[in-house]
Image (cartoon, rainbow, N blue to C red; front, side, top):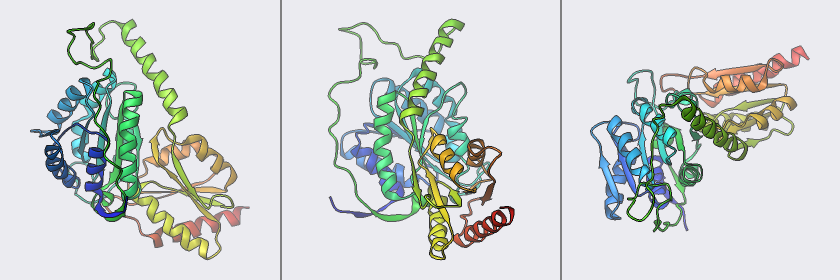
Length: 355
């Protein structure tokens, strides 16, 4: 298939359609509204379900119901809307039904603005709802990855019966790039054995997150933790560039990683030993891989479009033995490559003095 020029939000939506999404429920909020708009036409063209709910709270509960029926289901929103959905996320996690969520992040806190940000990192990786669970969280850095990771998200959601987030800042949602879409998948004929499809010819199924007994609820939580441990072993994803001889390694995801990549190339052109580590799975976080990189380098440099949320995970990995520098821009501002280059050079000079 040939590439075509696609806006990020449209790419998310069309990838979901081609991955077999059968039901979409959502509510418009910038900067992801084009995703909902694309689904509103494509899903109806294909005789699938599209419904614009009266709120994000209603939308996530509709998603919960459709997913419990074994239907490939998704929603999309932006930061304030994702906050409103958190109770529903927790119900979905406790009920072990597969759901895909696209979060196109904007500046905050509060209503903030519609500019691109990465301020949802903690929300999706640490507190996507109450209780002891983690969703899988995937972070594309370009439009092609937005497509590929959306398709992957549906497969992972089904494989583990879990929530999968694909998170991107508003810049990725709004930018246009050449990208290749996958072929259209056949929709499943049969539903999963656990799904609520009617019990006329079988024992009844129960999809539920309410466990009144302490023993029963602890048993569920132990089951969830065992599943999360498998995900941590098998679903870590990351990308690296120029780390073999790097004295300092920049750590960034999404648009911030694209900025960092440009800075790294400029610095390498000048003969400076810098590299790039880009987490693609924000959860499970690529701890072991980053720890190996940190051990071989002299320091790490985290670049984010927030006040330093992934920074805490990087510091946990690097420990107290390696310096970790940070550059963050907030309120919807994207850091410039020149800023990153200047700070990286300063860290190299600092490390040269202390050697």
